[in-house]
Image (cartoon, rainbow, N blue to C red; front, side, top):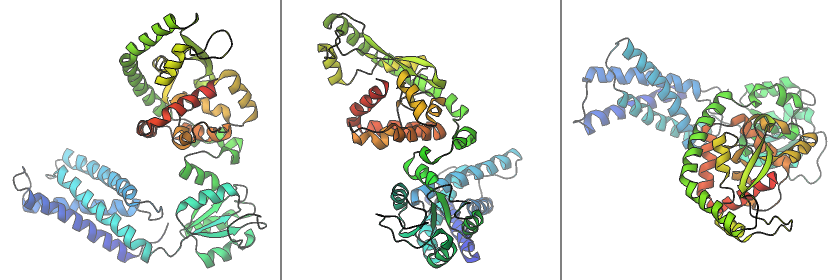
Length: 443
């Protein structure tokens, strides 16, 4: 934690007072016709009490180490400060300890947060933070690429030996970490391998520099934070099997089941005429055979289920598209029967893509942790659709896809589902490649 000078804490208090003062001025002067149950003395007491509460909360939550943007900091600090303020308001109201106006409290907290975040970004980095840049402890291409996205200058690499082809300056062996950190004052220390922490680089050295204000992260944490992907290639089996943070949240899964089933049922009712017409056309205009193709896939807890889609190919084994199959493919409704799987509870709107049974069993034997993706329900849309959708038909390794699946297992929440859905809605040209990706993993 970076030590904040007393002058800046006092400045925070002044800005908080200014923010609540502006809110009170707007309330009394700009909107005189609004119903107000506060006289002037109570208005001052009201603003002062919640202003002081807001300032205390900000001192606790504002670490000033994250390097986040203005909007991210504003939303984070405003949400927490408003929450604490409303808890205090509820307690005071319950005990009838005065008359308080929630709208005034909200306006004061928002004005103060805007002033504090602006001051933090404009003043703090210039006068308090003296450290900048990224220092790599151990190096490889993947870690260098990730560290380059931190929007900080790359200082160099400390490693047992200089890596051929590295574009970063080699600053010496890992034993020189204290001297190099003291000279360069990096903001981030990125450990490329967890084995280095505690072996080549003593743990107490990393702890000491973290206490001095440096952000110490390994490549797994960096990949998770920046790429929204679990770098499972660098994890030990115990990290997946024993750490509760990598397990799916039962509460989140229960909430997801509710809104997924409701949305799936609504969509199924909406598209029932389309399903009926497409099914009737398949019966009348294609060769004899079933309307639906059934692909046996592994679902939640590796329970098999049949993933449904319209049959588009002839039954003679030639693999040629039927006339109606070609038409359904052009309309992009081949996978519309997936809605039936959603209503059955076999498929979610968002989650790891469904995988065919025999293919999944082969992958489980060759890729560690692969079975961990089945601790949540498979989904119609995967997190990889955001980051890999633009690749279209380019081949993607299962190792890369598994990283996104494991991230969804760990962080799967309603907001993440909303993020995936909004991305696909705003990028309709990716629906074809996304559907193909589902089919490729299931075929």
